[in-house]
Length: 368
Image 1 (cartoon, rainbow, N blue to C red):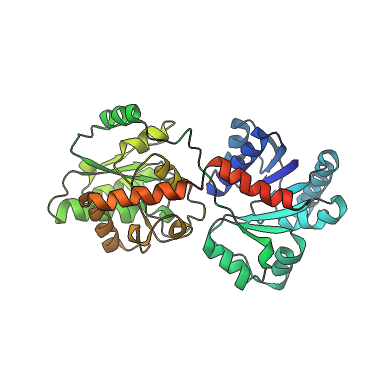
Image 2 (cartoon, rainbow, N blue to C red):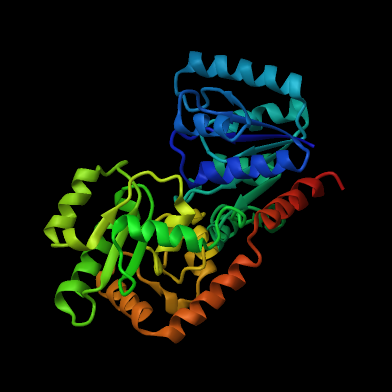
């Protein structure tokens, strides 16, 4: 099968990861895959690092002349490649693929990995319901939106969670010992790990405040340590360090910066947390934490209610509720054990192989 994955996103975020990981899985399964990216971006660089055939095109421009030039490049690509599937992971430029579809006969798929609902105007509803052949969503909330608001036919809406590479992400006892020694974590200290680039959406400030309340205002939590497994992005590291100072957590918090040994760092933690205020429509970090065998608590945003039981969730941005969830995860062995069982059940259906097979079921179904 010849497939084009369109990931015209600037940053290497979860949407890009979903598209590139799928492209790599398809390539490894013997399919011909081309990835259309936005040139000069982090996502284009990552596609090349992953050994993918990445073709940069300016799909995000609003300039009519540049858009016309992009259209010419798309026509040339489609003539030479003759794809059977075009899968768009971003809305910008999607209408161009819809415009060209009747002339080249490919099947058009729109994957919605964004937390923002699409515009429900008449043109957008027509584009999704009549022009594209399937809409892939990554969480049940977005599925309901397409069915009820966008009026997309039920047989066109597919819920396909991204998988996780279980070979790369698994508990690493040696890595755990090494990373804990590197950061000075003692055997009796409980390490809470929050993974993600520094950005308001990820809830770093709220997590710092919650840990501060436990450490400084409640008895029995002085051994709690916070690992911020991330680096400056939309929010700079200096601002995060200012929050740490504001809440008097300098002794209790580690900022790892960019790490290549993410699985070892996750293994070094005792509890994982997802504190996002919104988003988490794909939840790559959550799945990686689960795969490394760490108990996980989370805000109730995006796909997280699909992945975790209610007792592991707290309302997004609710620091009081977060404090209670962290405390229970530390104090209640039965809670941790049940949490791990729930995570194992979730992961049993979310391997890379599952991700690939569900997508191929969709793709191949077009030609049955």
